[in-house]
Length: 482
Image (cartoon, rainbow, N blue to C red):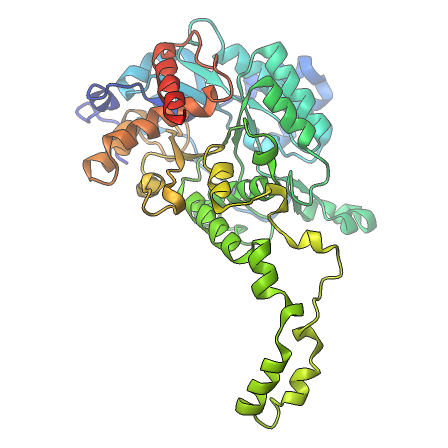
């Protein structure tokens, strides 16, 4: 990206050619530490506020190169101010070519999974009160809405914050982490002083610490869309360099998103809660195309019918095997040794055979069920400069002619946007290069973001500057589905 200059093309130039709004599905606020202090003290008192000061200086005990110089500066200083001041953001949207923004946290990405429960919950509550105060103000709410930060270390904790944010503060969308990280239990039990140096990552669905279905049900009841945002840096060493931040960053959001998406699907969440909409932020859509294809291709080989016919070791034709060993064996590959080899014809599994079906939570009967449990419920946040965004719309590439629901998000407020006015132009470059059609671009920057939110809450865009256009888009989508 280039820095901000007076003669540079701006997003408004692209927007003027279009007959639809552009929704920024992932724009960030830069919460200020001093602002948080003003809200944290009334929520939790002076002791937690003191912990906040410590948290701001030390993030982790792991030897990990953390994000540095991660917000706009120099020629982009105005963008930094824009990410901190809702009224300035609104004033600059037209030049950027943006009509409406969904605002996600920055500081909350580190807070939402903090291991100190009292601190975690207090900080999330204070942040949610602060962002509601800033971004739901009457003079800006027609152009933007914030996402509440929901801690997920237990369903009870998550439900409490969810209900407060929706019913008391008026939030319409939320953000959750991709996983829960706890100390390794054996270390915590036997050497608690070392527990902080260990990490065990848990899913919210498969092999989870708790049953999270009550939380998913409350999300469905309250009609909130769910943004998912975190990255597995540090633990395990795969992204744990002590010297190189870019090494730790590359692919991290995609990796965290893939873990959550995979567990939601195979855990049957989209089957049990078909109205829920999940948006996986900042990781792009290439990983999702790979996951979707991999699920289909794994099911083709490991659905129960195929598994039992072709892979069940009890069905091994031992007479055939012995015959082949007699004909083609040697002095150690003998038919006698083959016949006596137990693992060739006895299953190693001693559990209930009903559990052999790894897709049992999805209750898949036909291959097309995979598409219906994946495509409508999952949305994939893509940044403007990612050329692989076009993969989402390639029905020839994706199994069963699927078009994955990629959604445009600017990431304004973070280091990868050096000029907020350029993001729409960068996204539109795929159209100019023939990698995306105008219809694809409409879906990418508008329709998919509409169905993500209004698909579960028809009133999501009520009272906003794009209410009429969003209603019309939902009408077209619903008519096409009939």
